[in-house]
Length: 99
Image (cartoon, rainbow, N blue to C red; front, side, top):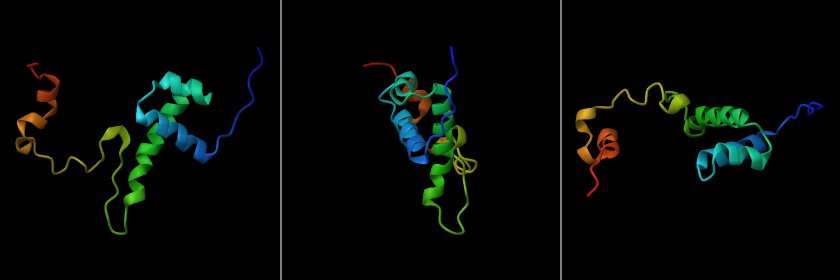
């Protein structure tokens, strides 16, 4: 079996694929098949998009935070779990008793 030649994708294509993966209406494998790229590549592009998305809304003098891993470096700095209403905590949503 011959190897496929190396492909260079445009930034617009990468963004389109990453947004499709972030939407979540299709599985990663379905997105990979639709765009004919490897699932690992989609995961990398998705991570890059999430990391750089905060830069769109930055203005001069504001602290840069990264969204890598879903949590920015300074995003939880002022979080106080005692102020979260009971119905809004992750623990209570996951362990809710069905009515």
